[in-house]
Image (cartoon, rainbow, N blue to C red):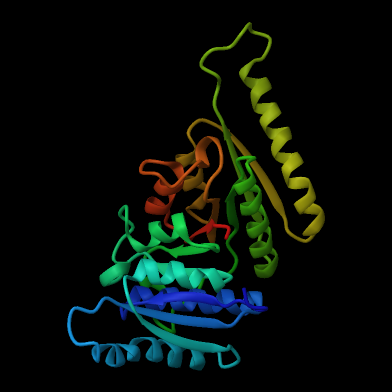
Length: 281
């Protein structure tokens, strides 16, 4: 990886893609990274068409340079399936950003689409910006003062998600809400442990996981939220007024995978807020 790996954003000429570009530029500025705008073209005709298509990435770069003149912006247009092109570029990136609506490869978050594919296979964190067309116009202000929500399940992937969430919250000067859910065991040996006990144990475990991050980021206000029941409705409810929601790509319990029907995939498909998936290379 390069000394200062870029934030990469995929474009396809749609308003949603340009909304994702604005989010990517914002992330690049906050984290002190350059921005690389990538357009992937699945050619079905003469190869010369790729030259014409490069205008999509160039036009996006021109708009972003007007919006943020101090940002280092470059472009690239590649022949290939968008998901595969972006996964390959993610090997040398700090973050990959895509919109959840658009034409071509960025149309949806159905299984196999670009967003889900990246969330499962990228070599760096992935930010999926839902309904990104909301931020396509220069008059549309990106959210600034909303909290960040992170799913903290106690796994190594959840720990990576906590690190990303704290870094985002610190860079944006916003509060952080850490969510952990618990389920009552179906079969309990004896009755010495009550539901209240399990809830208290879960809360203590979450506080212990948060402690080193609180010490590293003392200026980030943190709220720990422990809930009994399924993870998806809790996370989606917290995300209603959130700036973004951060999840590990693998873990235990509710955040274990990106398989169909998993919590991570359901959150990706249904969250109103952008979702940052803490992929690791």
